[in-house]
Amino acid sequence: MSERIRVKADIVPYTAEYAQTIRSWIDCEETYHNLCRGKDYPPPDDLIESWQRDSVRSYILMWQSRPVAYGELFSRPLEMAVEIAHLIVDPAKRSQGYGTKMLELLFQRAEQRPNVAKVMLNLYGSCAVTLGCYLKAGFIIEGTSSYTVGLRMVRMVQ
Image 1 (cartoon, rainbow, N blue to C red):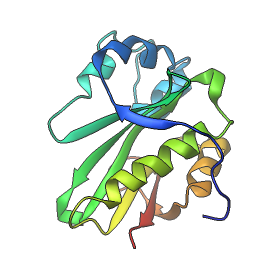
Image 2 (cartoon, rainbow, N blue to C red):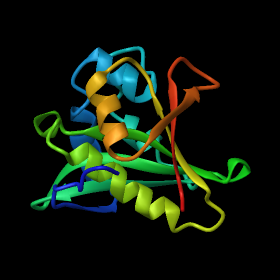
Image 3 (cartoon, rainbow, N blue to C red):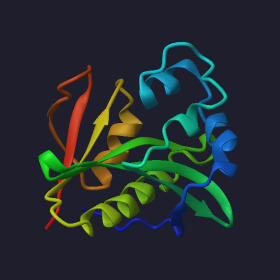
């Protein structure tokens, strides 16, 4: 990474008490589609809870005891990879470094897992701000997503 991430925040495991707060960050149809390819805005009340599975580790970025971002780590053992999914930042905190910080902390968690050679994520839509966040966090474009329209991005574990 070319720049040090300056935001002072840390991730904690997700708990259901934050589900509605996180859902409220899905503030428009475009955000909903880019986050999870959702089609019928507004999203259902149980959307965040529906993402919770045994194979997924979900985290919240906390800043001054408040949640400001959410993201998940999803194991991809056949690819020797971990995928970051459902990354979203509170609209009031976007473009302030919280997304980049969340990606860096999720990457650090992922690289500590055994048999992980890379961390992947997908960019759906054409948001230059989101692309910039992913690039700033050290991810590079690997190609296109194999199962939907979008870019596949990767950061190798050293």
